[in-house]
Length: 340
Image (cartoon, rainbow, N blue to C red):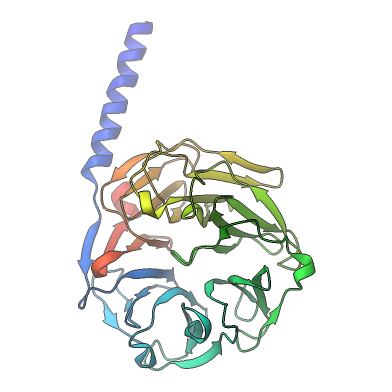
């Protein structure tokens, strides 16, 4: 009886492995090969953006893509996108000083208006996230020894900086990475998370909608200035995760995922298949991706296995579709119906 049970489990495992390996991303390649590090999936629309001020949208689930570039940012680097229910869209560029900007479009990307420009010479935007049409947060590199955490209540037109007294002082050689638009993530009405790296992998946690913050030490790779946490991810149960690694050792074998709770951080075993910079979930199925490949979980992020050698910098999902975007203008589309 035990032998038969063991055999049954082995057969099931083989079938599952075969099913996973048979699935693959549908790859599209955009003209001019932009490096894509921003993505969004909501309200029946998919968006990606990156270098050369390039922005692309799909209204048919990723089968075709239309350009919606920001003309004023021909040399700009877009690292985050935010869609709203009324059809408006924010795009965040990165770079030192005034190169960090936020643009707004109210006509599906046909035109863009400059909404915010960084005025700190040492400043550098990393990510934005919003609760609703009006209320959101912005994370920027440290200015005067503390991260720039800013809050808006008018959709991003005006911002106020959270007091330095409410933030932990940054650690030696600590850094935030504008890798995928996921360095900052709003979990619910009160809880917000920030991912940081460097020699000290940390998550910053706010329990009062970004007004006060505390540091949580993360049990993931932090051996070097480019190591640490690169992104925050949420599963469909609205549980938070921090993921990362080291972009100078992308395929390295090291711990790269931790689950975040009010008690701290718990290491999740993923197989240690390298740097992961974005995570997205549809129902119980989660994907975690980085340039070197993609992993999959069928149980809300508790257990993981290798999924594909195709990897992306950024990842988003609506109720039907995962969209990944990465180097050389590559977009990957995966339908939840395929996985089922």
